[in-house]
Image 1 (cartoon, rainbow, N blue to C red):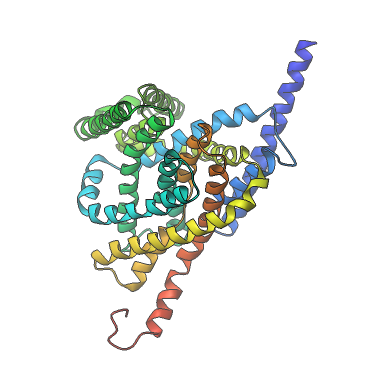
Image 2: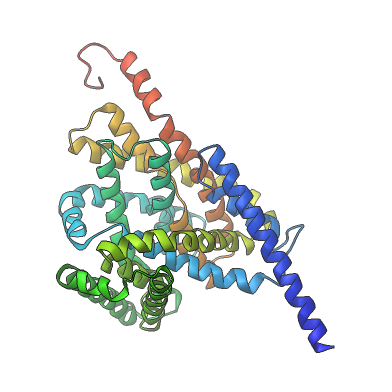
Length: 398
């Protein structure tokens, strides 16, 4: 009897997981056809199968939850792969002024939380949500629009690097606050994060080739298992010492270089896409769709304020590099999408039970900007042509 029940439960779990994967793949294909990010569709899928939905999943919920955690780790690991220690140092030097201006985009989130009467912790969460742009959506947008070689693209990437570095400090603070830690324990968490970042950057700069050689092999299976094992181990250790698991994974990505880095990008990418989809689905899986309509006014106001702030940040950063009107518009509008990292931050808060309305508000906000952002980036060149036609001879807008 017990065996039969276990078999039935296993069969149901397989059916549910298979259905989720099939639907997710279909959504990714649909998004690709329209050259959009699949993140909004994943979020909608989570609403359809989660709490209060017409098609709730039960047997596979635990699997999706575990996959969601792995998805966060792999997203941040891949982010670390994009940057070498010397690039980090150079970006800190050249992008510091623009990065400082970018911090203003945390203000709408903080202000909204305080106006709504939410707690200071919720205000801290919302500041991070509105500050960070979506590296994943932006990278896909640049690739889809053929702008990777554009003059403004290094400026965009520099801003993203600065945001990621701020996140390396912000996440330990947030984790400490959500855990109910004292000011001293939060300070210790930040100190540990700074120490870890410094050690990894130093070790990568001086011993990067040797470190990468430890995980490199001509056997794809060995490379895949070793890299995944090291990433999850460091992420778990980081979590144990009070630093975000994502920060630990980010540092592992920075530490890899050369052939090991290239193989990691090739071999781990499919797993990243799989578990990242699980993460996005699980986030809205926990949100009652009935709570979304009430969140639309606040989310829409946040989206407008942040889009304006990101446009100003990208415009000013590109202007400092001597880039023309069209490039400034492309830089500013490309920076507007929100996505995975806003969801990561909100997911931590939702799990900690910070504010009942926070999850729905952030999900709606991300849906708006993840859809509007890439569309706005595509409209940058037509908008620039319109502005030039409307300007007078000698007008600096030309």
